[in-house]
Picture 1 (cartoon, rainbow, N blue to C red):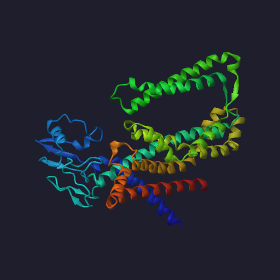
Picture 2: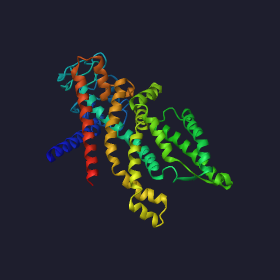
Picture 3: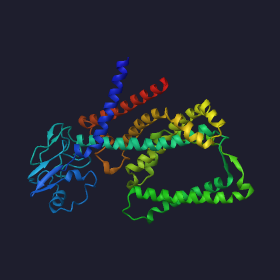
Picture 4: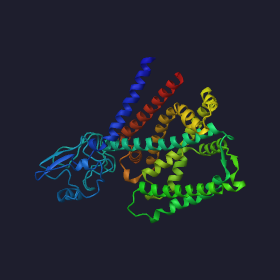
Length: 414
């Protein structure tokens, strides 16, 4: 029995290590540009440049710009060139559309090139290299799973901990800041979206997100300050009990009433094609995955707040805020890491499902596990297209579930 547990743990850790290596080393493992080449006696690193720059940007070097513009990466007579083990970039057709190798079986040699290049796992119906897409999909899966789960974990921990510790009658707020915040909140959301057309067209998604969030936070801060100033009015200065537990539980029930995949697909379909980016899908997955975390943390917080050390802290005169942050919350978070591991697995499945249904980021077409499965759906006879991503998803989700069970077992033993 102990040997079986050890084997499962080793399998989980080994699978996740391989996933991390593929994700972090994608540009060194699968890259259609040479990692190093020498042209005219000059040493160049066009492949390594893709790690921190967009591959579509010009190089500022006449020879490399010409090579990139005419798809001559494999036919140009380099003095010396070193390519990655998989000499094809994820989501990028290896050559011009006229010479793309389509539906090639595993182990097929690419016909274009001054040195042999192999499609180790074959190609799909469009000509995307399956091995390169498998490596690229590892990065997308790790990025989407971890970031979406972090967002869901942050929301779930915050709401669940507040609901479990403060209940329906422990959190008391003054009417002034509460009313002004509720009144200004819809306007803050509207202005966060209204500011987007005023930003430069080439602004990145992070800049737009920070700008909108900054505007909303500034308006809410001004509203709270105004509410505190209005507390001089007797009616607005009175304390009222905020039913946090009731609000959070009804909100969680509303989210749980609709299946997560159906809700994410419905909202993703409402987005314009230009806004169906990976970041938007990560936000949708995270926003619809927090209830399970909140329910788990709430249950733990209900147990923790009745412990003897919480009562001892109150008897010492510590404030409720300090008891919550320094004593109750850290102890309620320990078992929640099990939910985090399971949440990453669910987020990876959701991202693959969205890509399979055609709602993924189109810039990652042919570079995610879900897009490979979508390609295999239209060409079911290409078994080598569906088998690798299917195994990758199965092994990754299985490893995360086994790791979550291990973390949960350790917590119960303590």
